[in-house]
Image (cartoon, rainbow, N blue to C red; front, side, top):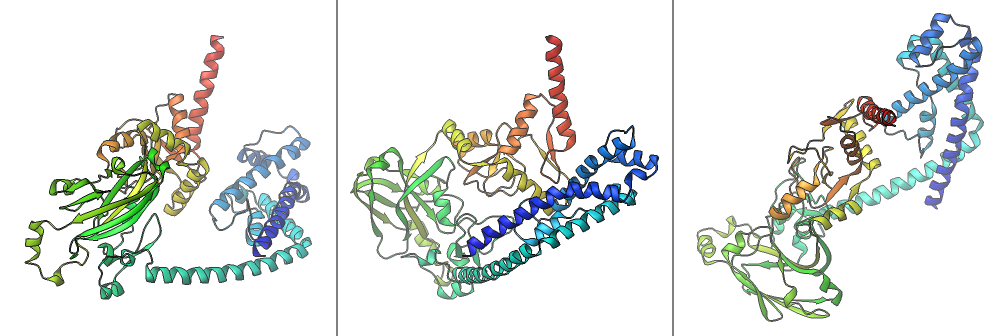
Length: 512
């Protein structure tokens, strides 16, 4: 019901917009004649045409032909700029009467219009005629108003329900570690702990459970489960063969048995076992002492050297029975050194979960360098429109007139070939993904060189890519790009590109 009302409203608003847009040029021409723009002094006519970048006229008839075209063009341009500065008014695709009415009116607080009051009067009279047109559509507008009230009430009701659900989720943290079997926690600490939200999965966690006390606005919190799944952009998790399991080194029973099915189709992928220590969400960590058996065959031996290695998964394909049930036995214990150290520490001083780990089993598709770059270009891209919208939003938030970004890669100090960034990065500046992937396929850190955040997924900025390709193609000596408030490259760069194109065409004609 409400969805149908919304569709009907949008169709009615678009129809009204189309009628207004059709009438505006006619109204401007009518107001030009009514106010006698052709009867003003010749010097004023010449100045108006100059300010509007219109050609000179030879006669009164020619002036009346030229002036409406260039005045209309100027008025529509300043209206577009005014709308960009009013993000709550979406006239291009109006979703309510406010956007339609305010968006249709032409602004008259403009330097050119202020210099020539007759032009301001033309705009005011044009706006008056637009309002008269809307008055004739009163019946349609009243129907739209009625639907808008119904939709608004429905949105308020939905919003209240969502807020209540979100509050309940935030309060209970249904995906937190404390909801997992075998996890030890302190109920009193949970009642007073901070609530943190994972940047990727949007789930809530108790700070005491994950051993992170606060969430800095400049940094992003990634939960243990997201980090386990996204340790490397070049390793894509296809399926979860066994859900995350908690192991506690202080348990009396130092053995845990898991079972999972591994379909035959998974043979084409790597079967990986990953482990993370609770409280350390920046790398994979294994216990200091223990063993893991797959189907009664020992595949992993824990020791201190292995514990110190970060970011490593274990590939266990050779021990897997595909198309059958697999049995995993985990034997674990604390190292003797840690046991002796903890004898001198009272139980109250020890965090409850300092010796707890999460183990999970995935089937994983691993890409090589070339495959991964191809995968990036096919799937994970920031489209031209999305990139422009981010630029517009960033410029407006910062209160800037323009934004300059470098096309020199921060890693190699060379021109960026494949501009991109991490999917959770907020900056507009890109780095060269080819260089970044080359470095991190060995180091396996995947930290953004600009904002220092974890890049669990990479995206190509198609807008910047297209601009850089043109700059390289035209052999321009440019090291930065400047964008205006409309998300477009500034006129200076645009002219440089066009000038280079013209010069090349001229050279080709001379050669011919």
